[in-house]
Length: 357
Image 1 (cartoon, rainbow, N blue to C red):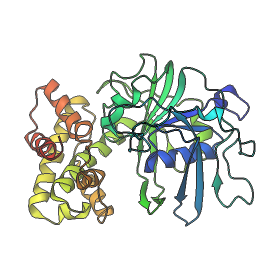
Image 2: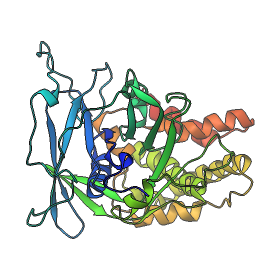
Image 3: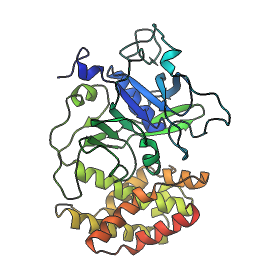
Image 4: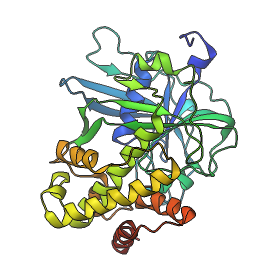
């Protein structure tokens, strides 16, 4: 069992992507007494953000930072590139040694929700634990030059599937994360709209066996990460999330509507039905135990989040790159291998890319 005194517990987690869900994951890791270090493109020694929990409590989240080699593609926690002519970055450990930091990351009594970074450890090279929370299209650039250990553990907290294929060391353990929680920006803060179920698990190639046993750190983390599970049917849960994203995200993005509008518009509802049916064909071919009939679940998801703006709609409104390749594109790649045709998904991918190549 992992304990606060064990070497496994002392190993820091590095965070690539300090957006809404990345920050929520960092908060839970710190609550479990684990050190979280944000990899950034600037020279700030710490990253401070405010989380507003569902009960209204405000948590000031503080993460240590380490500089990341700059890439041409905008990515990670802050999308603005360093200013032209900026001075070389000094390593944060050369500037900051705050002895008042709480090593456990658990708010001490009277801290009013303070979740602080612990003292910066001397980072072993290579990195052994990584939370991958940047957008899927930025994965290649984000990992380029990153010194990952041959047996690194990577938590993939991204939409879609396949974004890390071929990018990790052969011996790395990739733990997939599927969450029904919701976080949104609220001014300068990040509001946790709902703390719902989160599932973690592993799977190899589509149709292959799923790993049965969780890692040693999972049990202690689950005591601090609300509704965290390691289910036997993880792959099916992951695929259900994929189908929901493959239907709702591109339709709401292309038509600039909230999630609930899809099934209020007969034409969009018909398109949603075709998209769900095509996805079920692929997933059943990959795994004959797939139950199919995804449409009712997609409808329920759209209705439960009726007033929400999908991530793809938000990206398209902002003129940002979308995750279409990791969502509908993944289904198309599987269909090509299987010799299946998905005309509705192919049309959607082409339409999204026509607006945001």
